[in-house]
Amino acid sequence: WSDGLTKRGHVYDSRMAVFADNSVLTHHWHALARSSDLGGGPLSRRLLGRDLVMYRGPDGAVVAAPDRCPHREAPLTLGCMKEGVLQCAYHGWQFGSGGSLVRVPSALPGVPVPPTGNLKPYHAAERYGLVWVCLDTPEADIPCISHDARPEFRRINNPVEHWNASPTRLTDNFMDYTHFPYVHTGTFGTSLDPTVPRYEIEQLDDGWTGYQYDVDVDNPDSARAISGQTAKKLHRHMSTGFTLPFSVRSTIHYETGLEHILLLLAAPVDDVHCYFTFVVWRNDDFSVSAEEVIAFDRAIGEEDRRMLERVPGVLPLSQTGVVSVQADKGSVEWRRRFAGMLNGG
Ligand code: FES
Ligand code: FE
Image 1: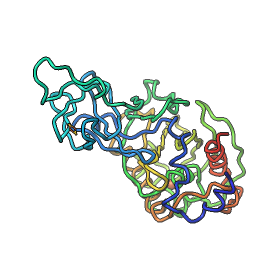
Image 2: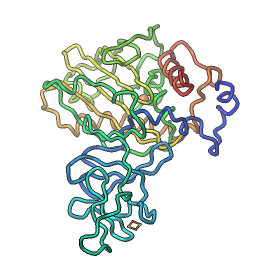
Image 3: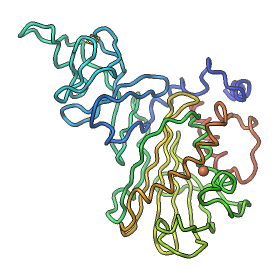
Image 4: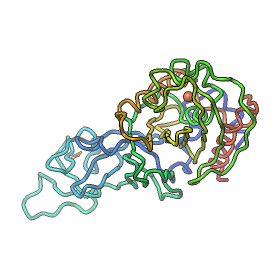
C-alpha cells in the first residue's frame, strides 16, 4: 500500500481514487448537513463519490438514500416535499418514513404499492445539531463532545460549506499550528511566536488523540467580546486532537475559566472535495450573540480556506511524500493513523 501511495501520492490523478473508494470510510459517520437544513425540500449531497438524497420523513427521522428513484432512476433531489413525504419529479411516486414507498399515483384504488419500491436508506443520525450519515454498518461512534451534555455550555452551529480541497488537507491543517502566524494574519496570528515548543502526542479526554500547549495571543478589539477580556495579550491553554478519519477538536481554556470548544469536521465528497462545518461550545454568560461568537471563527476558517483551496490534490500519505519537522508532530500522527486505517490497520 505505501508503495502505491508513494508512486501516485504526489501528483493527483483524478481517475484513480487515493482513499475515496476505500470501503473503510463507508463504516464511519460523516456530517453532511445541519439538522435545521432539513426543514424544506430534499437536500442533495455527495459522499465518497455517491449521490445522496436527504429528507425528513413524516416520523421526524432523517432519511439519507441513494439519489435514484427505484421506478425509472430519476434523481430524487429533483423532487419536492408534498404533505411531509418526498415526491419524485418524474411520475410522482411518494416516499415516507424510512424511505418506504407510500403512494404510486398511477395505481387504481386498492392496488398495493410494489414492495420492492422502498428506498434503501443509509444509516442517519442527528447529533450536535448536525445530520451524520454512515454508508455501511457503523464501526465507530460519532466523535464525542461531552460538553454538549453540560448545561453551562451553549452550542452554536454553522452552515455546511462545500470546499474545493481534500479533506486530508483540512485535517492536516486543523492539527497544525505552525501556519497561524502566516495564514491567520487577519485574525489572531499577527504577532504569534512562530517557534513551537516540544510537545508529546497523548490520549486526550473523550477519545481524542493530540497534544496540549500554552500560547499567548493578541486580543484585538474585534476579539474582546469573544474572549470576554480587555487585556491586549491573553494566555490560553489549548488542546488539539483528532478522531479518525477527519474530525478535529480544538479546546481553548482562558485563565478566567471561559472555555471555547471547536469541533472541525470535513466530510469526504471525494478525494479532493469536502463539506466543512464547525460547531462551537462555550460556557459563557450568553451576553455575546451567537453571531458574534462565530464571526471570529468564521473569519479564521476563511483564511484557511483561501490557502487550502490552492493546495492541489490529496495530502501524500506516505512518510516520505512531504517533508515534516518536529512541530508537525500532531498532523504527522494523524496522517500515520489515517494511512494505517486505510490499510486495514
Ligand atoms: Fe420516480 Fe418514475 S422515476 S416516479
Ligand atoms: Fe488555521
